[in-house]
Length: 460
Ligand SMILES: *Cc1c(COP(=O)(O)O)cnc(C)c1O
Image (cartoon, rainbow, N blue to C red):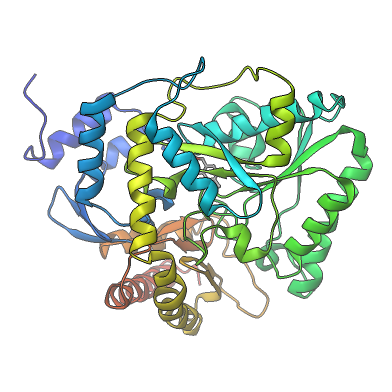
């Protein structure tokens, strides 16, 4: 076979891709008929595809490229680390400098007594670790019957058996089933499910479902509650202001562990280092991945409080770990990513420059006839598409308004993702006001074209 390179015609690359590459979360036959878009290069917030299009990446890859694409420093650190110590494990009483340095740095950045890091290769793996950690915690404390983890419908916690089961997405559960001991309460999505309640009333009502669930299961059965500070894959659902304080009150009252899944909201996304700081949460464990390395290397982990880590330690050996826990190259690259985030003041840039600028333009999208609410926390935002803003109505089944709009964005060289009838963004944190203008102009054009298409097809 000839060497496959960037210079091959796109159609040939697409044919080989369709023949041999099984894509995640993809309808394989649908994609084969159409051909995948081939990305070849990235710099800052910009991607270039095999046809030479310059695309603005409104999603930071998959919510992960916080410092932007193509930073040479990370490549250099990776090359140096591969030459020095390409791999060694952290099992069996061994360690190495990148794992030590990264764990110490994460402990420094994380709030409160979150001072201990268990490394994984991804967010899903880290959440699998969390299932085992919280159950082990109660075992060691002599309360082995506390095994159930309460999560939310339409939450996303990964796609391994553990992560997929923690998540509350029924299409995922339908493919392969769900592990036992995980239950789901309703999500705090006021736009879709709030009815005639005010957002504040609704936030309280949804949080109080946690208390009802704890009482109906029995406190002696419940190990932990897990939630994303802002649901990401579920559609960038920003909870009403009353929600998280009430959840914190309930987990405190019943003494159950709180896991904040910060895979998206960590490392500057919400304008603070962690989403828990933005929402005033005090988690016992945080799940991290994505922005930890800005996607330059696959790495994730669990940041564990002193309280939990000391109990795990009391229990003797914890029979858990991954070959690549704390991988030296991934750890060295993540550390360099954190250095850049910190020294270049990127979290402050989100809070003081990019968020205020984007917020003004993002909220103005509600002037569009099809845009109901517009939400933005830090650089994580969503708009709800609706045929009737007053009643927060849904488009008719099969109108695929989100999908149609996403296709128009693609055609206009903007990556914006659709989740049902919501459009979402999560751009690299280094985005400038000028680039925000381009993103918004392309989004507006795409919304106009999508609306024109719906009208032409008699759907609105
Ligand atoms: C992406 C994501 C995960 C899973 O991370 P992977 O690295 O894809 O395994 C878990 N939780 C949240 C909130 C995520 O967004």
